[in-house]
Length: 260
Image (tube, rainbow, N blue to C red; front, side):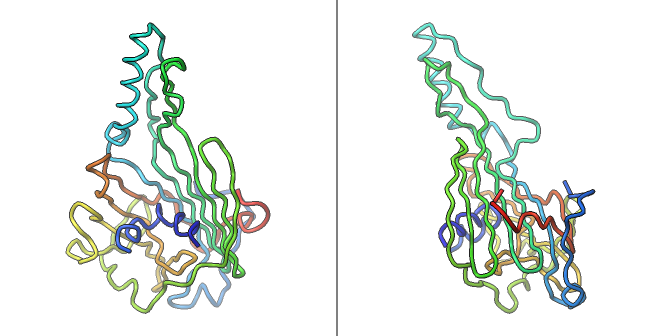
């Protein structure tokens, strides 16, 4: 259960605070006709979101301070140093892929950060963009997960599927239509009590049409847009944005074999 809750952190930051399209791929699953046509029924889907910092330099200020101290020590020892890592133009904090095939749920979350593990004068004060993450698959009563650290070490586990947090009216607060990245959304109004200045200032879910709501394995609505200002004091405010969405189909290879 704990592994699943950790996984949900990037996709639903609000809960933590308060308690390329597959074109050309023919291995897809389509929602069953009855489900796809029923009002309120959840279709098969694939959604990709990214969590992006407002400022890379603000986001990595602590790592930069450690690097600067290393450079000063290296200068005193007359040792050469490497330059501080330059963020790629498409740098993101997290990239999350959500999939549902009508029966089972899949989530892959990739975490990106500036690693200062080897930031020592004798190693040239090396910094790098490191990737870790977690993969989760829930279906048939079982929740499987793999945690991946920045060195590629994988730790697998499994436990019962999380209990459902779905309840009647849990999407009633999402009343404002919005479009981001070509994805239709339903958002909470700015004056909704669930939003707070300096914390979460925007929160949206996918508008799947016909009263349908895309959900996580625990039944909670799938957040596709979110503005998080809670961490701005320590680093940088960040925004979760939808990158791509497919409704009615998904890559079925994610639901069998090893988690990847």
